[in-house]
Image (cartoon, rainbow, N blue to C red; front, side, top):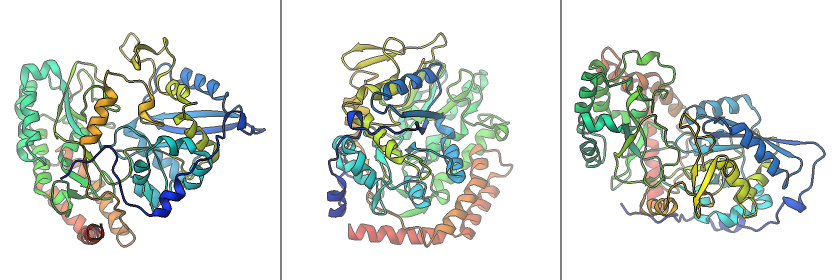
Amino acid sequence: MKKVILYIVITLTLSFTIGFIVNSPKTYGTNHEVKEEEIVIKWLLFGEKYKESDYVFEKFNEALLEFFPDTRVEFEVVQKTAYKEKWDIKMVTNETVDIAWLGSDSLNYIEEVKKGSLMALNYLIKAHGSDLTENIPKELWELQYCDGNIYGIPIPGVLYRKNYSVVTNKKLIERYGDIKKIGEVNRANKYTTRECLTVFEEYLENVKENNAIGTGVSYKSFSQIADKGYEGIYGLNSPFVIKIFDEKPTVYNKYELQDYKDYFETMASWYERGYIRQDVQDVLNPYSEDGKLKGSILFIDEYGENGTVPDKIPTEYEEVREDLEGYKYIPYGSCRNSVVIPKTSEYPNRAMEIINLLISKEGQDLYRLLLNGIEKEHYIIVEDNLIARMSDNDSKYLYMLSQYTVGNVFNNFELSKGEFDKLNEYNSNAIGSPLIGFDLDTRMIAIEMAKVDLIVDEYKDQLCQGSSPDWEATYNEFIQAMKKAGSDMVIEEMQWQIDEFIRKK
């Protein structure tokens, strides 16, 4: 499959391109019309609350008064693992949210569009987003195109999806295992075969025998390894996938594939052997032990070099990360990170003005303040555009906010030398999906897809935990339940639409 350049050019209608990219006057600063009543913008974003978060948000609002004297922003920071649940609740209850982050590894952009969760932004961008259209390449906007409109503002930075790496304690793996062998075996296989899993077992057995296994394998994050080589149709977690190295895109139910069956069997074996904690079914937050000193012995996170891991899970120990894929992949369903204005926004015009400000030259200092805090209080400038964040006595940052929540990553400081060059290299060498530009019409299969999703929710966790008394009987029941719900019909319809898309393309 061909490698793609940094930004993927997609052929779209001429009317979209001409109608979308326009210049509009600035609407902040001296040209801004002050309202009599205070405007409160409610902003939902992912991340961690730090010791100094509220203080930085207060300073941000003070600085914002220079541009919008009548406006204050209320930030709600939600852990990434809980973000989807929080978002779903807010959309169901119609709670006011003016600005939000939407990431393809947490939420399905296309699904949220079709559910009516997002405002169409074409007019708002024309009226209040001149800096957005000037500073974000057209090719990224085209990845956000859905049902004739733009619903998300792309964040330039990482374009490829989260790629899998295993994380463990460096001291333990050097003493009891072979991390290079684990990586080599996994990278040699395009998909996660049984061999990709058994290569971990020597390490797991050794740490168990020496009472160093902690809380065992993190089943929730580790289950991502089973998806290696697949691209979900209609979302990252879709049961329906293509194999990305197939010459012709063919739709499968991934749970019917032998590699997934082997994965479930292996997890059952690991549970029996004590590599997965015996009380796993009672754990309320399956991610809670990832990175803890006596927590998960193995978990899956993102791989990157030179500081290019967007938001890595912090560890209480010296870690080692090993790439399990050997490539990076750009999927078809929108940019990886976007800023959206939800349907529940009370002040969409002002929300767009603030988003536009933070990507503009005039708003760069405000943007950097929001992401990094205050110089000499929360970070120091090491050299040129390079900073180092300051920590407390427990080695936890005093403040930070992910640069993938808003704006343009390349307008921020670097956290390691050459970070942006490396990121551009990764983007340039990433593999592009053959389905870029594809828009699945779910009208004929929406009910069946929803039924299958409910069945996955019922069965998958137990199979991934390995805790089922008879994993194979549970697995067979799982497959049959999906078929009864219409999974074969969904595959047939998806395949037909993909074949038509490829033929016309």
